[in-house]
Image 1 (cartoon, rainbow, N blue to C red):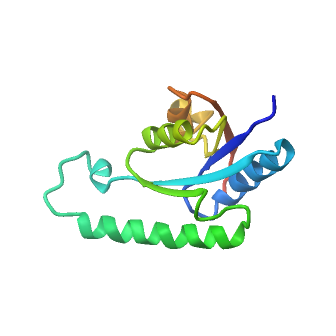
Image 2 (cartoon, rainbow, N blue to C red):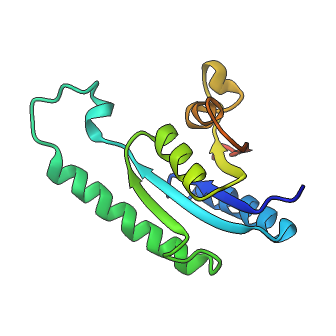
Image 3 (tube, one colour):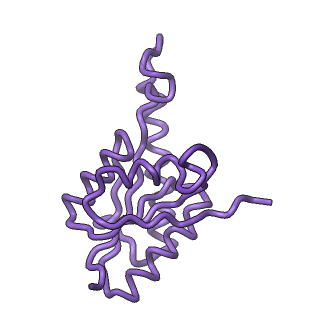
Length: 146
């Protein structure tokens, strides 16, 4: 069965281009709708949750920068629009699963560095996405810069 709606989850770095291109190729070959999502993680998660300072201003700056990068991707990839590009705040696994289910996506495409542990195969976000996924998940192997 061809895919109907593909969600590509990106980190908004230069490395996300091959992931978007793979998702775009799949959407064209399947005649599927293409949507994009980036998740801004709470800064407190990076510090284990207990932070003795207010990070709200830094968190807002991070969100604003993500919004700017997302706008650049929308310009670069015409099939992406503001309506099918999503910027969320939270834990990537939960937010991507929620959006994929809400949008009735049947494939999630994510990049994978594959660096450590089970991540030797998938990468931490890609590995996280596989657990509890209600649809197919494709991990696009990213090449390391030489």
